[in-house]
Length: 155
Image 1 (cartoon, rainbow, N blue to C red):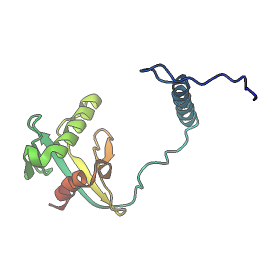
Image 2 (image 1 turned 60 degrees about the horizontal axis):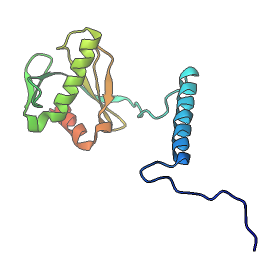
Image 3 (image 1 turned 180 degrees about the vertical axis):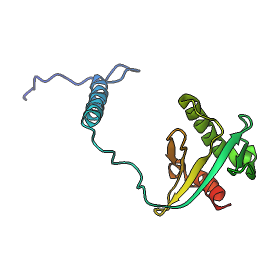
């Protein structure tokens, strides 16, 4: 009978994470940081952005929230009411309006300027704030949320 002089593997004490997993997590974090640092320093172009496409439909509108309930009023640029959405109907639209308001406060621009909702030939919807340069691809928030802005674009 032969015996090997290898160290017996022992499980980690109860409630402790095995040391090999902790080292693997740190190695993963360091690898990600190295990749991101390389990409930022060498100006590697963004590759995971949605396709742009040509604008096939566009509408300017003003989003105004009354409170944090989720209710929002959507106005045409002439001030006429396009939609008056209750908290049940306008939760996502109100959330986007609050993001735009925050970006405008940071940029110190007029809070009541219009935004543009754009439909592209790729079928994607996006919202763009010309006063701050902020934009978002609405498809990234899910079909139901994108549909809320699609209805506003169609009105």
